[in-house]
Picture 1 (spheres, rainbow, N blue to C red):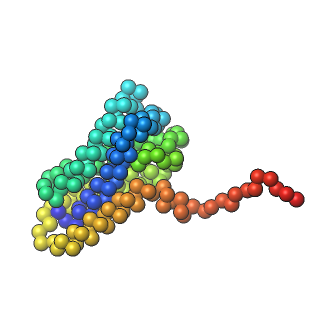
Picture 2: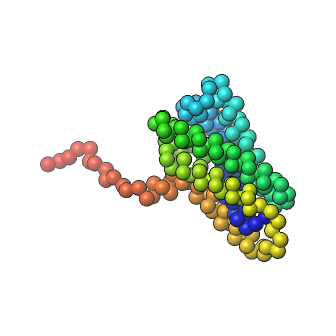
Picture 3: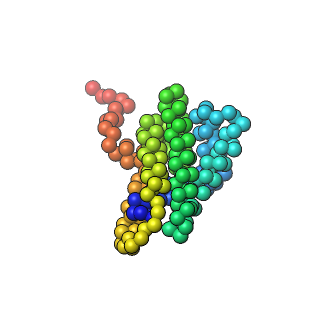
Length: 186
């Protein structure tokens, strides 16, 4: 596995791991996720629960396949391909939501209050490219030094962790609006 594939696998494993855990950690969390799919209004009502189960299961599968990729190269290719497919679907759903101006709280990584927006479309698009690039660069590592692997794993994990907190990171760069006093005294 090439170094880019290692970093990509690490990044996507972090992203899909947090995403899956945020959905399956409790019945309430899974219900909130399913409700967000309903609110997006991109699926027929009868398909929402099935889709929610498939998404959570797919996220777990991507995580496990990418974690297994150093042991079995085909697992990485399958993991990247499944991840890219899920991310394409997520990008399409977020894009439709933004275009139609449907206000839906993003439940990608748990209990966010942020509505789905262009940042989500961009994030999912970039992650799709990472998954595709990881699949294309998967292969034999040959004589790659373990230190390079360690840096790639750590770097990918840090990027993945930042992606899961992207809304918070973006908020750091938004201009703050000073609070207006409730009662102005003359």
